[in-house]
Length: 199
Ligand SMILES: Nc1nc2c(c(=O)[nH]1)N[C@H]1C(S)=C(S)[C@@H](COP(=O)(O)O)O[C@H]1N2
Ligand SMILES: [Mo]
Image 1 (cartoon, helix red, strand yellow):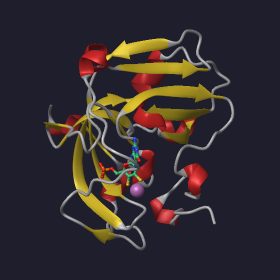
Image 2: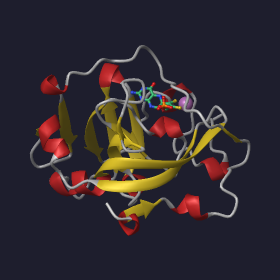
Image 3: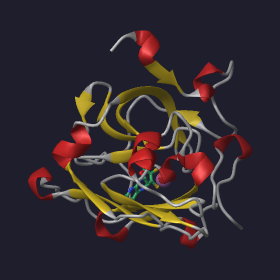
Image 4: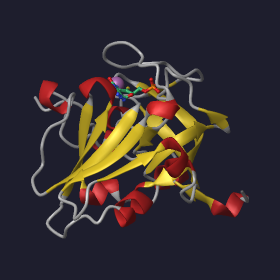
């Protein structure tokens, strides 16, 4: 892939790339609720459901053969660490939306992941050009701890929106809280506005 084909997440072009209250880290912490699922890709599927004409299930081979894009982004975790300069490769959210036969009433999505983890996004946040279902980070297949085989990456919001081990996307007319959003995290989570918690 040529450099000019990389989607630059707009926040990487700021003169000061650190949002308020964040500290840069060079390593990459592994953070999540519960234990790390060990996913067998021969027995894995990605379900497109909710307000769609036809529910669809894609297996790993089908996801891998969709057009892949590359995104350059920073990571901002609500617990205070930021990791700059990440290259992601995978399937853009827009490609999944285009496949989805989603109905015009769909205004929100709920991302589903292994073990019942969920996170919610408005359609507008979901369809930004730097949002992707990533299979690779810095050229390498994701590790189990970081979400193998597929994780969502939403560069402009705090990293809890970037669900690891995704199993599908549900289109919805009304917003519904995900796992962290129903436990006091902000509904949207813009790091530049410090939308950390909802209290
Ligand atoms: N499935 C799942 N995805 C998840 C979480 C989780 O608990 N389960 N935690 C989120 C949170 S709070 C953070 S900070 C990031 C951490 O991603 P990392 O372990 O790759 O750094 O994953 C997000 N995605
Ligand atoms: Mo987090």
